[in-house]
Image (cartoon, rainbow, N blue to C red; front, side):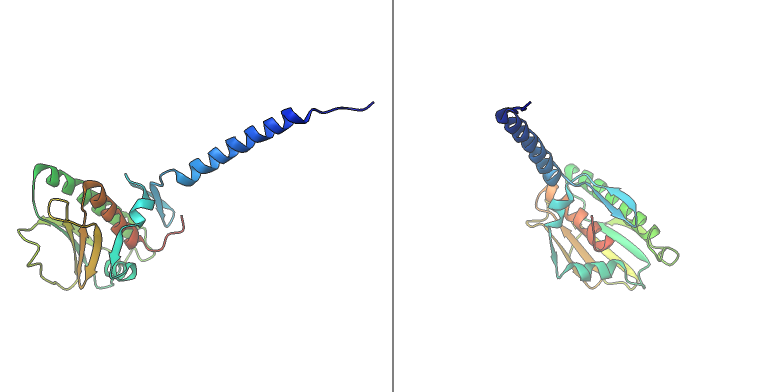
Length: 186
């Protein structure tokens, strides 16, 4: 007995399966990535880490990373210039983000015993007269109210985080945290 298999229904089922597989693959490739892992510890973010990775860093990521991991570093002071109610709310969000995530990163580092760093925040009147102090890294937040660019800049003992919009400011803060974490695999 000869079995006759209709080819058209098989091709249609194969095409449907291929379309479903392609849609699933496209979803997983384009979905927002909002979790980064540091030494196996998950850190969740509000924004897509792929977008944060696109924020420019000057002079380069290694210089900024070295500033956060300097063995002489004892304190990180987050500086902000008070502004409108909206800007002050944004500061609260970003200061919490920086403080919480950097604390987790330092506590889970291979050198946790030696990485007892204090993280504080304080207002400033001007961005002009920020002095250099030994053992203190100054992270200066420059929100959209005072910025016309989105970038992370570092020199000496200062890291300036600029954001042109609220979203870009958040992405620049996230980029700073990712740079402090070091090279990422995931």
